[in-house]
Length: 139
Ligand code: CMP
Image 1 (cartoon, rainbow, N blue to C red):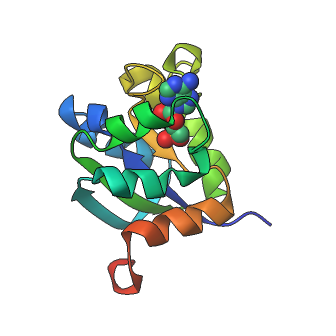
Image 2 (image 1 turned 30 degrees about the horizontal axis):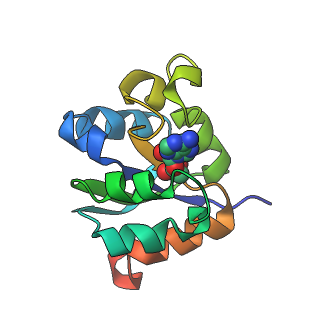
């Protein structure tokens, strides 16, 4: 059985382009409940730790630089089948390949500045949520 929580970030481009409200509207309209939410900024070291799974990838340096370049919104979301349904809602990593109506198709700039992050598994959703939130911040 699939879990009912996922983790998301509205990335620096989504925040800088004033899409926080529009993106949250789409998330809520799709049936997700917000269990925790935080407006914050990652240090370079925090971005390295958060994305450690990608440390061997050629784009790791660019990813860390970008994700620490400005404020983000981090959130834990709840819905049945949350991880898979959220990835459908946000669309492909590369907005040029994202389906019409998805968040990345509507609001992302590029594969790096792609508006939102979504966990790729229940296990990573738990790890990523715990990176930003402690128990009493989750409702
Ligand atoms: P995200 O879902 O946050 O997880 C890893 C991120 O790495 C991904 O979104 C993209 O923003 C970024 N990424 C993936 N592939 C590339 C690439 N080829 N070049 C730059 N960034 C990438």
